[in-house]
Length: 499
Ligand code: ZN
Image (cartoon, rainbow, N blue to C red):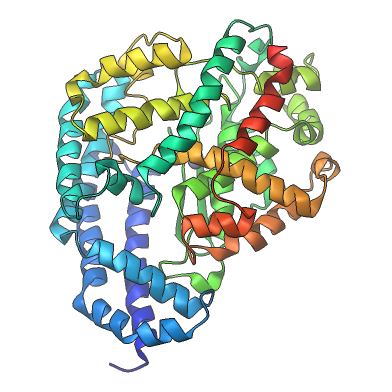
């Protein structure tokens, strides 16, 4: 072995990162390109690559290097690349070492098979088809949790995989504040409903939607040499390596939701794109947590993409492209329609306000499942009852209820809360950006989003995962996670609809 311990650690971490990125690419391919028949073989390939990455990472050599590097860590500045890399790697190493590679491989395989089963189950609205997979996932999660010393709450272990170091109790505090304010607010607007959004349903040529989506993304910062946009049923973003940002969107012929999905995924993409390239191929080389990630997708989708100045810029172009459908709809009517608040069944189509209740419902059900307070078989009923309680809507079938999302089928329990936390964080960061940049309306009205993007890159994206999520939020906003700015934003936005 040559090189300093630090260089040797970097080499090892680069290998682990390469294997992880290979798995990322296998997953992207599964969801975008692969014919369904490949699901079985792909599950094996993913299990193997994930197990190899895990083995390389938890190897004793990594532990020895981390020990040797204690001196370097202590003598280096906390913010330095060296100290950040050793500190973050140690935390991840100590966690990963507790989980046997066989279990990691098994979870990956079950995840791939569960995801493959989810599509057909949803298609036929048959919960029974998915039930054995969900039971298997739950069983695996219990084995996973048992790898760690007993946490304060069982759910803490699951949450930590998506929102490192955050505790269930902290999430509950934020969500209770949201719930307390939003449930009565939703009831109030539920009766209103005088905003006409009927023109948002109609004939919208998918190819044109794709073109417009790319046009918007280009104005935000999408370039052909580092980005792609493909079509999937369930939009997502992934990055198989620095300088390779892959967005997906779904171009449905009867509505314009793809435009918002594309802006949403752009927000995820631009965060990854903006990470300091010096951090690539290390554990620091991507966004710090799912909640902070979601704060960015939500910022570009909602704070930018549903704002008046944005549509002052883009509505003429949209109207021209869909003149048959929107020719007689003025900008104000369109703006009000895309901001309409109305309880509905499907999370990904929900407005900014009711969206949070979809998440809180899932957060509560996940805790009930992992805490054995409800059985998988009882999930559809529990789901339907809470939809009625929180949103006042009746669920007609499983496809429009418990089967609508793929997360649980893939074993991702603990993931959902990050969506609503992201909403909360998005407005905290937004307020700081406006403090520095001043009013952005005129710049948005002329299609110029570069100041916002550059500010976010400088203050947030470039940091990657050098600091913990909480440290990152505090560095950017000056405060801990706080629901108040977000609630203030929602109240202001809703004022015309409840008045
Ligand atoms: Zn997202």
